[in-house]
Length: 101
Image (cartoon, rainbow, N blue to C red):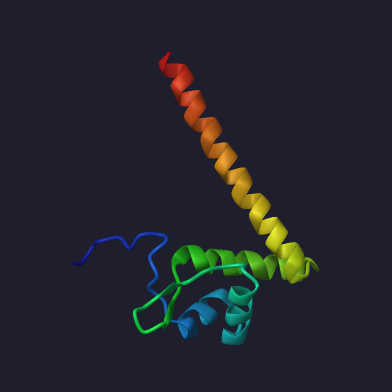
């Protein structure tokens, strides 16, 4: 349906498209998946489908690689960033509840 937004986490891009969008090679995407840095969706037949969230993560991985981090360090940074985002969301939610009281 025209004008319908695709959810940020919906797997819509094939590996070849995702690699181009992220500025890296398909083999790197497979390696990052093996290392647990991202998890694309899969079709019933097993084909990887990358979301916009995956593309953003791949771009962040590239930034961290350029900064000199190895994949183990990148995994730690990504986990810490995710934890921080969750804490910020919790904090905002609690502040909203406090304002209601």
